Length: 171
Image (cartoon, rainbow, N blue to C red; front, side):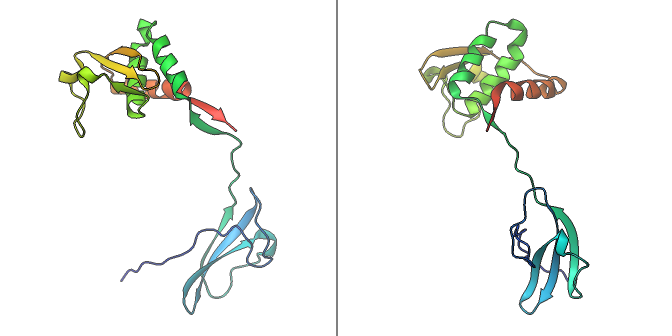
């Protein structure tokens, strides 16, 4: 018979010394059985000798170190300008098409009124006629983006390229 056990997440505080565990510090977690169920304790490595007798399990952990920078999507005006710039380079039409789809999904651009989609309706070839007719949600300017078929092999390469183009490192 299996049951669900609720065990808390790491407390990031040593159960012995009551001090906060520092980023990068090694500590041990132990699950013990007490009267009201299972209880997790986190113990700094300097206070750890061996698991207590009533331990059901234990493991070694490290407090995560926060990254100094996070990836954020570039501002909408930068992405719109990137869409326009890529339009000047025919060899990058596949990148431009995927970027347009991503911008459409993030509502940075929208379908022009003449080709707008109803709620719940998906984009089909009848709606695009080989060109996505978009408009910027920032200034209403039109953007026509050619629809380009993309192979699965090429999609992975383009994904990495667009990820590098669309995201910025932020403190």
